[in-house]
Length: 434
Image (cartoon, rainbow, N blue to C red; front, side, top):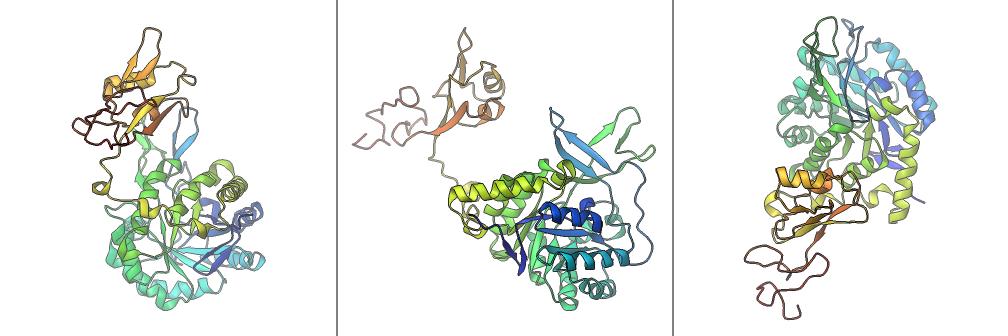
């Protein structure tokens, strides 16, 4: 049976599923429920310095984007860091870590970009017995306007500077949480690496406005008659997060830097994909907020079953396996050719593939009077649009055309229906055997 135990920076947890620093990890009650549900670790909601209290809005804090079936695709969050007293959070963290020594407990921290502020809070956090800290350099709203969060995460020099302070005043793992609100994620990652960070976590939320109320003419969620930009998270951000994780994983200047992946993890498959791109674990927020803490049970069982099926005994067996296959466009094989194939037994004759290809692509699908749809091999460039718009999974597939069955001079299929090829005798690509 697969062993999901993870050792991330020397921090042991029974599985790679951690709750991210967010509303679900704001207090002892929530974290205890999470651990009882099976989560391997928790990043406590971001702590701030003592001083003027953090005041959250007493109104809607979340906006949303839904799919056609009202499945939640993304949340826009305008909530700030914890508004609970620092001492209360520290006391609760101490009790939780004592009662759950086998679970990972990380303290997320955000204080002003001043050495004295970090030097003051770190010893107090260390007294809780937590396993490490995560530096919140990603929050794009509220705190950024105060010179913290993404205002720091967007300046590599600040990232390196604060990381160095933390490594000087704290003797356990330091994880730097990166903002995606930047042009090239490699630069902040390199800065964290230069500052001797033990790991990076990413992505934090994406700056966003999810909707506008056309009656009030203000962005939602509205507080009175006004709204603001917030942080976007959920399944919709996963592709962005995976690309950024891959960029760091394959960057020679950050090679070997451990990664805790965040961004749209909803199922075990999402987690496996991030791990295949080099992540040592994953952090989850929106899925827990949507389905409750017990969603982790499906994640654990699904990942374990898949690993058993593949013969992987631990996540280290497949971690980073996909990274070498992530490349730049210029290195793609331009001699590779595929063509679309429609399975007539599965086709429901809806015509989506035809409409999409005829109007917006390469006019490579023909429609007969009885609404039978077939691929014109000579015109098909394998763009994959028909696969993506087809409502029946597996009905349309892209299948590779063997060498020798494409005219090298024109790039078109020589002859024959797909699956019953006849190589052209004058095809310069064909071998004698063909």
